[in-house]
Image 1 (cartoon, helix red, strand yellow):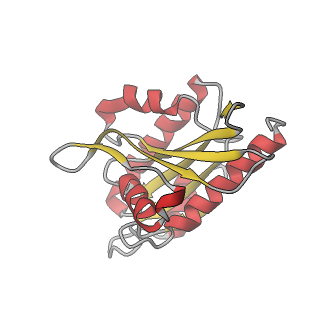
Image 2 (cartoon, rainbow, N blue to C red):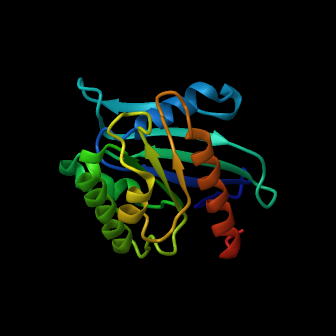
Image 3 (cartoon, rainbow, N blue to C red):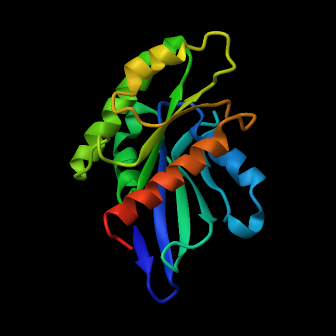
Length: 196
């Protein structure tokens, strides 16, 4: 969190984290497409020719007031590929909330788990942990025929009982429910810690 006292703005950072091709960028594209341009900034995306994010996607939203100040929610995604581990760590600097985007396909369970463990390791390095940090899980690609049961996903990935949402990011199902939940959790967290 960064407060710009001159402008009376609170900048909050939400990072979408998950394995490669799980739907992180698709979430941000859908949000950007559906929101009124007056409350959102440009979507900045760095992609390869294979349409995979290299470093991050970034979208800024302005909504309401918190403690008399205008909140600006900065949404980022991290690259899912393992060889961008350093970039993932850098993007987590200053994070206020997390959305873990899991790929519901049965054959992606190991990648989901590896990425979640990587997230926890990176959080610990910056003095945080999933046990006490505001985060939610989005189980994406629920429309695919090989989607794993929610009970199995929960048992394997949601070991801190975070709120979770089923989604199909390509058509927007669950996208705004996920976003609303993480925004509420971030605001509640900073208020509970007396940061406003």
